[in-house]
Image: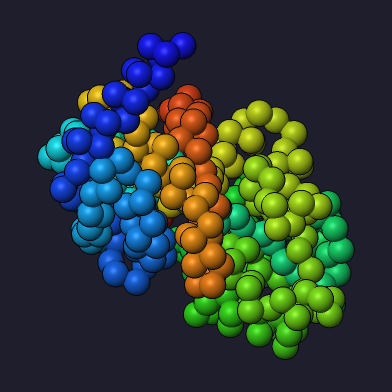
Length: 329
């Protein structure tokens, strides 16, 4: 036992010696003020206390091509010593499988450190909507508002109609989810499918019964709404589940953080622990709550599992996704 303790102490000391007086760069693949940037900067402020040797943590934005440039930089050029972390798009695996022409990075070789936030999506209806339960969407037409192609308000109902045989009718042209909520109040439309966080300003409407959550669009549980049914409950074949997983599972990556390939296992262990400890830090949690930034933890093992699962998707299914949702990548 004493030898084990000495070994652990030596390991911690060597990591501290390596990071002391160094800079750790956190490369954010989006512009300043974007949700990824806000979350990354919050993490950076607290991460310094949890990396041995307390190196400075510097945020650098690399927003070209919606984080594709950042992902490629991390993959091909960044030092392989743990001093560069990437904050990249949650859609990276989908983009790779869909054959994004400019993407060089292979998500299977990037080292996942974990992710923060779970931007789960829900379908919501107004009090006058004839659709009362999730099962009703298969027998009654539900008129929902949409921002247009390439947006969750369009992609979600489109997939539900095509894959499960739901009866959503889309009315496009709204500027954002808030505008669609107003349209629901004016009885222009009956509902909307969007990120749960988009409804933070409608808490009173939910309390008053003017808005109702019909179901969650995620397979994973959402802690804020534990009783909401999942749309996956209505899938009758494994092919239907695989199709929806391919399109929807990117949300389970949250806002992911990665290291380049070939970082030494001991350094990976150090950085994974540092990120996890920072996210659990009471000071970070308090700041996140005050700023209303979702810092829900997504463990690296989960991101590895989802990546492996997505790479088992058949080429035929991927081609079907390309045809139905051409703007997904």
